[in-house]
Image (cartoon, rainbow, N blue to C red):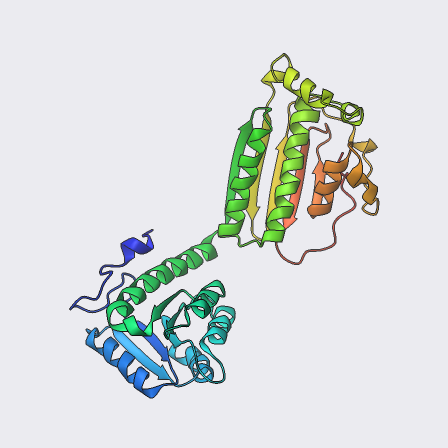
Length: 334
């Protein structure tokens, strides 16, 4: 798949006009309440039109928003300061209603701070009106190339069926952050989770993998934590280098399926009796106990938690849309 830089055949105004790979025809909607400026912009676009540009004009933000469904622009070029619906509000409305259509702002002198705000709220780029002749076509070319890339990604997303990651980890807790960051990056970029969801997944994965390393493979007792001091961590460091602990590994699988994420963590330790596990979602005191805190968080942040019969494998299911109430039938976390 081409990158945005590869898609643009001409990054600056050329006598041949505006050409962007992926577009046989480019539709540009210009929104500006000033008739003189509309004429100027229309002229600039006409000078660079070699038969592949279709331009529509709107005299207000409201008119521009109404024109989008019928005209179906590839990009909206809007003034910032207009009566009624200004450029900032128009950008926000476009982002909400037509997220794949980029908006480019035209800013007057002194409105740079407003332009930054608009970029933060969804504008793709901006062009100072005093630099239109020099910068407009270059900016449009880059924005259109990026939009084409985003649309191709969206189409590819509709074809997506399943993604799966597999990791085999030594008993080194420093690897946990790298694994969770890898999963979070994927979820944010390709499954579009928000920061709150990413945090919940990250904490649950951290706790599950840490439990597998320490309580599973290294067979560390939680009582060492309760005794205080550094005994727990000193014993973890000692066991990582001696038999039979040092040869054991943690196997982590992340499986993305539709609107669900399945995370499976398996260790090579002796396991535990899952029938003795108790989970009380109302017992918030578990958050302050050295023993059981991690698995309380896992069960709280995940929609379903299951163990295998040997107690050395945990399966966590995270649902990315409105999901049924969390199941209470499966064995709770240790």
